[in-house]
Length: 232
Image (tube, rainbow, N blue to C red; front, side, top):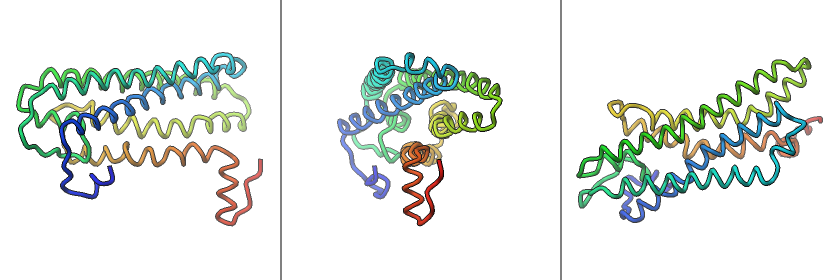
């Protein structure tokens, strides 16, 4: 990825391009559904705290994680098959810093209507459906938080969701702009810029956003900058 960003001309073979697209789709879709699972986790933690350990046991966590990964693998296989089943010209230039579906469809020498329909249906299923579930989770979460009489309790509950909500907005927001906008509004230059946001900036923010919720990490950071550790 870094090589592709820094070099204006980065050759890649069709099999390597297909492999890159497969892993990009697998982990990207996996991340979409994991964020949805994390939204459900926060819903259970805030709305059903006494039953949390029962509902979100080890078996449930394994099922959610494996379901997310399995969905990513299955959809990636369908997408890669539909895209690379098309005919491409002998030499082509991908107007992107990695192999993505829309830039590749623009380079096909045959009709891409069927592949574009598959891409749109997949985009709706892996973006709109998870976003809807996350939205429902947070509607229920916020309604529960507003019923908490203690200001400290409300603050603690909001803090539990803040990191997840930040990543959700960045990830789904950027992905929706690229994959759900009409074909007539396609702008590869704009898509490249937004792609950098959710393929580079969001993963960079993840460890920062989530780890700063940990008191030990915050105290270590305070000591590193020469300040007194935060009180409990």
